[in-house]
Image (cartoon, rainbow, N blue to C red; front, side, top):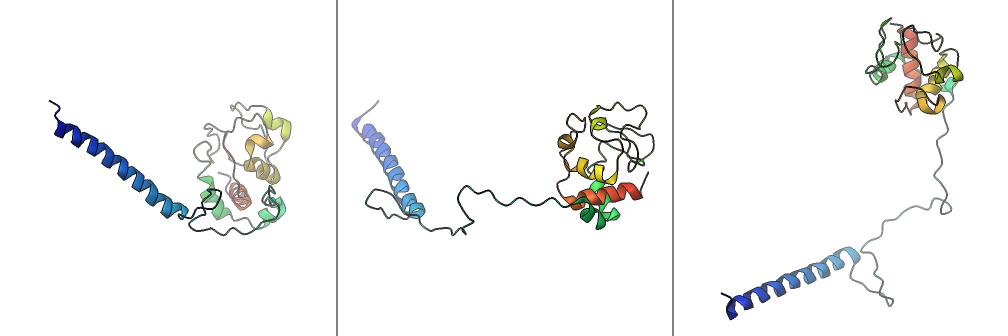
Amino acid sequence: MFDTMTMTKVVGGLCGTFLVFLLGGWVAEIIYVGGETHAEGEHSAAYVIEVPESGAEGEAAPVEEEVPFDVAFAAADASAGEAVFRNCRSCHALAEGENGVGPTLHNVVGRPVDAIEGYAYSGALEEVADVWSEENLYHFLQDPQGWAPGTKMTYQGLAAPEDRANLIAYLASNPG
């Protein structure tokens, strides 16, 4: 079954495979590391990506300043807010009396926080505000869980100040 020729072929195949792996590693080292070896055995990079210095190490990147409500709302566009409302449409309706997962947003701007009959509020909103003023909506829409911890609204919020302002302008101009 196993004669000398078969054994020679098997050993030759294993040695050939080992040789291919060794040569492949050597070629990859030349390509990716550059092939130069320093005295301590460290390799130099094949090419260096220049990164601009940005101050002291460990220093955090500058955080964007939050756009004040007045500034964001002064430039609000209700028609752009309609596009943002598509995010809300899965849980909220604009028609009066139509509650979904969340309460109706019919006349939401300026109404009391827990004014919708038949909707079970969590109680967290009443602790933070009495009325859905434009400014309260602005802060709530930025981070619902952060502004009113314990609220039932699980949406992560709108990060862009202009999106929040546009949405509030749309809700104020289109009561339902």
